[in-house]
Image (cartoon, rainbow, N blue to C red; front, side, top):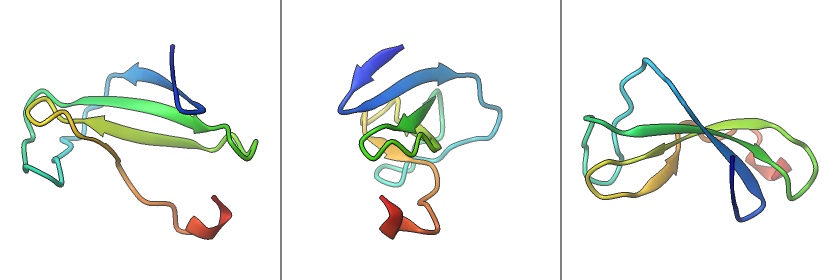
Length: 68
């Protein structure tokens, strides 16, 4: 696992095609799972790293964003 900004990320195999919101690339993108650690909630989130523009973005925004 690698550490980035109070999140711990793990690369995962993910079957769903993730499309980059920035450049719309959907080929060879890497998906990571990470836990929220700043507030100690430890909720799990999925992130995509675009193979084309290298943007890292959350897969789905939390419904209760105020909690974070």
